[in-house]
Image: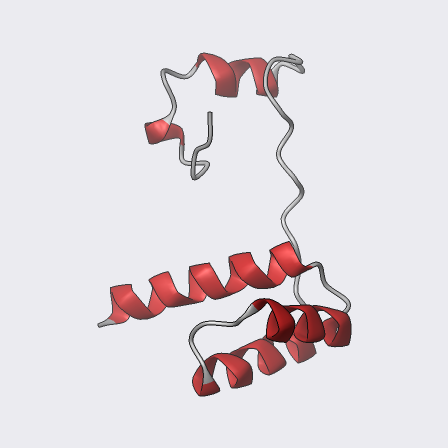
Length: 87
């Protein structure tokens, strides 16, 4: 059961209430990543050159920025959606 994390998409508020009350149902969400300004700058520069990264490019960028490949992938997905909203 995957979701974007928005409460409006969940099947009622029970899951959010259980999590807030310390319930153990469902998976715990990962803490939000606080990117440094240097990381954001490098990510933005890379995004300006190419909107999509292949596996090799993602792996290299993740190693250079000391982030996971999933964090890089998610950042690019979110950045493409931001660009889409702006247009």
